Image (tube, rainbow, N blue to C red; front, side):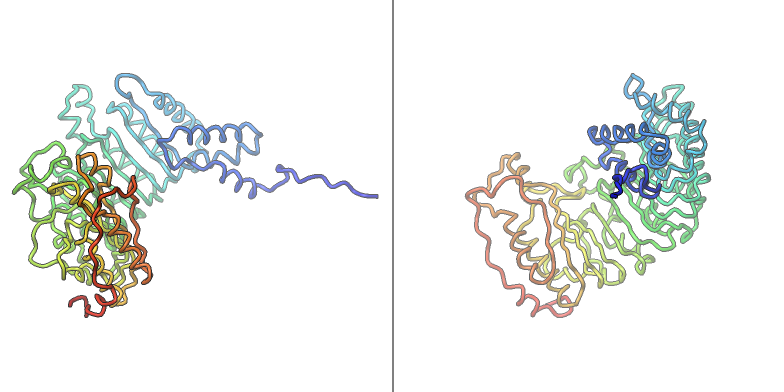
Length: 480
């Protein structure tokens, strides 16, 4: 007599298996601006929650693992997210068991009304297990400024923001990564920020957007006392002096990223947005402190621990001698602009740390980026020759370089939009293709973005170059 074996049913699976299945389904959208991804996420979540009580309890931790909280009027009308935030506030307040599930919290303020600041403090105080926190938006108003509709107070008084940050650092013992990004009108004080973070004993990753020198706060944090290992600065409008003090605080910095739109003008100047001004308006106004050599001097104390260094925008101020990166013995990932390195023959060896594995070279970035024509932003013969020697020195020295990333701000369509023609012009991607093919045989990958259009007719053929093997034979210790 045969025994009928029933097919396996999902409800017979243990919680560990079901939890893994649900975690693979409820993956928070990476593109938080893409509506179809969110529709699918919340549609799947609703289906799982309504299946049965067991699925509900298994799904709740995944739903609350990452929360994005937004409130305030968008324009003159209440936003739909404001209503959702009210409901979430009520739910989290009534069910304290939800507090432990949130590990990633993003708080965005669309309205400077100080009444909402108490709600923000509630969230950062209740959700004590958070490891990643981002605070962005309108954290720039005071109660007096909002009541009087005083823009100056909106811009300069940050008491509401610091109350939230203080509450977060005191309530979140496991806080590991923090991002602070005020609005375009907000002034982020570096001294006050670092003072507020003294309670965050486990903070390792810090992203700051919009640090500004017009804040009038004194430093009260001792050098070498911060546990921060990774520091990223975007839209930096503070002084070079304050940058130096900031870089002296970490006891062992592993990664430093100085993003684009760095304010390198003299502090006496007052510009609404220096990032959109070109050389013609910056003549004789660039602060001479902002050089690659001086930046590396600020990082000298971190030379034995720094593995990643990304410097995306520095002016090409003249220097007596290029800085020597050989002292940064742990550096494996380096990003520099062609403005800060130049491409003068014989300077390549100065920019090669002994353990370099990835080198990113960006063309057309910097406050002094006004050149005779957009074509000068693109990769040319002088760039190719500089990189060939750079690679040859790495190979000869035994540096483990395995990847060169080329980033060009402008492309072939930008050149066409300016009215330029490719007739009697060498095609930049011919240079890059030739370099990639040549270095591939030495185990070095060269990557770059492909042109939007095909190679046009009328381009000049590339000039012939000395074989790379001969260049390496002439290189002795990085010099001819």
